[in-house]
Length: 328
Ligand SMILES: [Zn+2]
Image 1 (cartoon, helix red, strand yellow):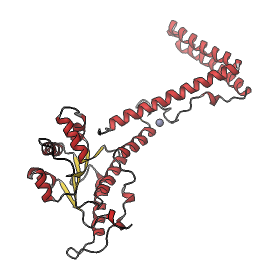
Image 2 (spheres, helix red, strand yellow):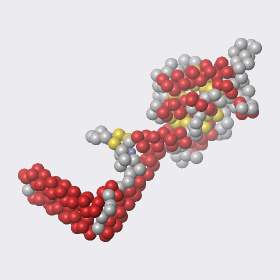
Image 3 (cartoon, helix red, strand yellow):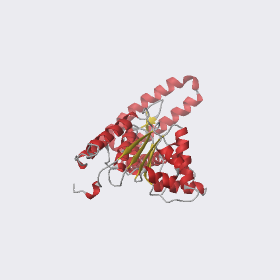
Image 4 (tube, protein in one colour):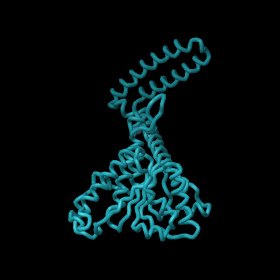
């Protein structure tokens, strides 16, 4: 259960794109060879073109002072020959397009990059990256656009006079504004508490999806996975997971409290993580089924005080009854 980094996904995507490029160009070579066999005139002409090009570059090297005129002359002859080549192909019932490599992405010709002199990732890479980050975060279609307030009861609580639906609407608006404005938010950290099945994970996924859409690096994981990375760090088996958790711009931990309690690890590393991230002014979003009292009992007072520090953290208390048990 490795934590997949954005960098690793990008590396993988670029490798796949380069493989596509090679496949497309190999296929084009095969087509060119086949057509050369079928159309001897074409084979002769393209042979002449390559010899001419080689000859021209040798001459330019021998006589650099006249490089410009030499290459201009060669260029003109090559153009003429290419036209004859094209005519020969058409006469034999082929089109010159057949000889071109068929790239997956015509924009970057499967290099993954566009722009000159400044290279940037092509939109094909950016779109695929987003899709894989969504997959890695298990977000699916859990986005603000799919957030359904009607799932929440509109019966007001007799004590507060507010219904779960009203409260959820406030939270949804708050979280959406948070995701839209991040990192320019008043309180960087969010703590979502309340019983299971009230949409806390859904809300975190909505925030993650919106942040990813905005190109913000998000690391989204369950507390179980978080602890696994801590354990591996502690054993010296893998330093990357902990490093990524310490440095992600936006770290989302779902289901805090469901991970095992490992001696010398769970509390110690969670404290380090929260502390370091706060010192680095990085945002940490946490959902937990535990109440504040249970959090304190499980993780000690010094962790609780960091989890609920009102100067930095917005605490959203989810109320109502389990949505998954209701008829929809
Ligand atoms: Zn592309």
